[in-house]
Image (cartoon, rainbow, N blue to C red; front, top):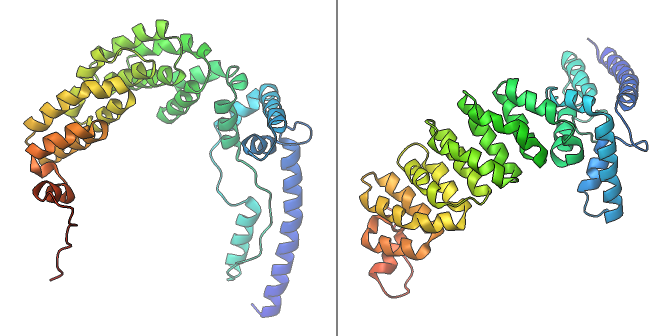
Length: 327
């Protein structure tokens, strides 16, 4: 192909794609719902923009709530759409055209305004605007009950961000035969954080669940609901002895009283530990919640100390640690 032919093809492709781009943007603009002529993306950006006045942001919230309630079915459809590729279709098409011509396209592109994808828009509206998510509770509950693991996790996230009205419909899943359902239900109830009189007795059942994941999820939810930590401590400590030590460490940090209760058991486990990595992990957890107790046990078990701590314990002076000489 001669240079002249290439230039002709490039010019033709550019004109065609420019026209296609105009048509595509026009169709997209008319297919999406508007409030005062502006799309979801515009109003969501207004809510997030701290430079906007409180009145402008309040108006944006009203716009999103109106758009969301009037177009709920469309939002739920968007929620299940796959996330699109980052590049706009026009740019992707031109990439293919220019690749076939053997030309690396570096600068020519169809400029587009930023627009949130449909799934991202639906997720933002349903997670941040309870007026809308309240209307979606039946759909989200059904999605939680019948969807695959990805759908369950997405539904659990949105239900956890919803209102107290979701509690009656989600509590029955605590008795599900599927451990994933029981664990995710506890997560939802903890995230909602309401109705402790109803929820705490139901969650207590999970403390005797045969699946560690479910027991840990129950403990986390109960701590978020400010339940008494004393009955939960044995489950947290038990987790340090198995594969759930990272979760146990997280739970220790979730509640001040839980942290205080865990100090003595952690010291006992550090003293009794025979595995160096397990002992160091327990020591790190203890140090995060009680520095004084950690320093005290480190004096008795030097291997727990960092090089600086060892140097300071052997030398009462303030001399810095010397770097090892290069060989």
